[in-house]
Image (cartoon, rainbow, N blue to C red; front, side, top):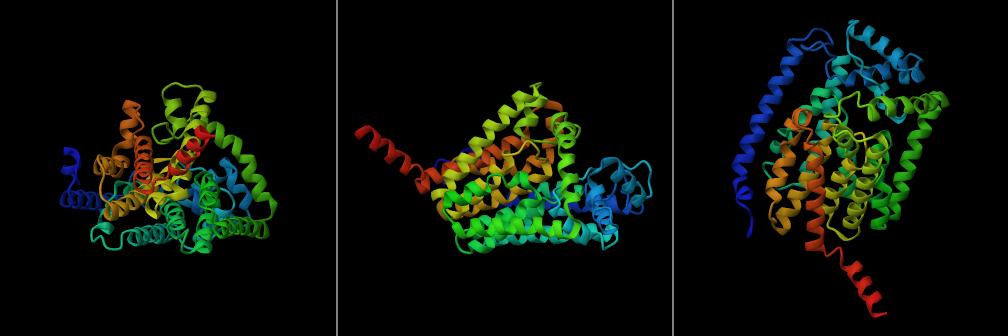
Length: 409
């Protein structure tokens, strides 16, 4: 603990526990109000319960009724959403996912909407909490801090899939050395949300784990083949045809809101940058994030590898929203696990606290100040994980040896 700042020392276990408990109580009260004061499948604010879950359940219902390919047609899906919620004024929530996610959506559509929402969020949240428990098995406050994290409220309020995404990527990094086939299965399943899987092949290759690489490839291929066997090529054609519209409207024009999409691309656009310049910025940040995560993956500890991978994943896509920062919550758990083993460095408690709180106010502050609060948090955690790998795992040693050989040659 030597050398910690005053702000680091301010963040005590008791204060963290109190903050988590307060947010957890607020989460329960807030979500309960949406359900109790709503009517049918619509919440008290006139939106579908779980908002974004509306497109998941609707796509599953359409697939179950022989209309799978139509799920990617926005006007058609919106009309079905209006029918399902019995409300012609219901907002539209678009379906942008690759066909493998349609497998889960179809299974969920076998249940009534509200029941499916509760099953979906309950099961995926349980997976994420179980993962945190595995990362921090001896920390008595780990589950409280995880359940009370503001990003849990954000993700539950949107009915989103970030709990599953974080569980798959986090479990893959946790098991990469010990259970490579299982790790590859988890990582390959991320084909359902490919923007967070861009760096996975590079991380696995950096680690030199051939079995995990094969397992991930086989898993991704199998899931894609299953969709072809069930629905045929039309669903893939519909997905491919929808991509230009999604890119132009959602990503480049910022229809979702720049403050919601906390990526380097979105921040550049929010500051007035052109689309080509924003893509250039995104490309540079993506390359740097992958390089840093790969550097840590090569020689770093399991904990630093996990923290680097999950934080870097958030920086590698132009389309990342605040609820996706569940991944950063798992990255924080990996960081804390490494700090428990090897000590705490200067500024680490302060930045971890910032990253934990960021989703609570990141969207609103970004809207009014144009400061990408969540983006800064992801960058900070990746930087901290890389610093630990450099100091404790000597990940730069091979590079230094190579430079010395060049000098002496």
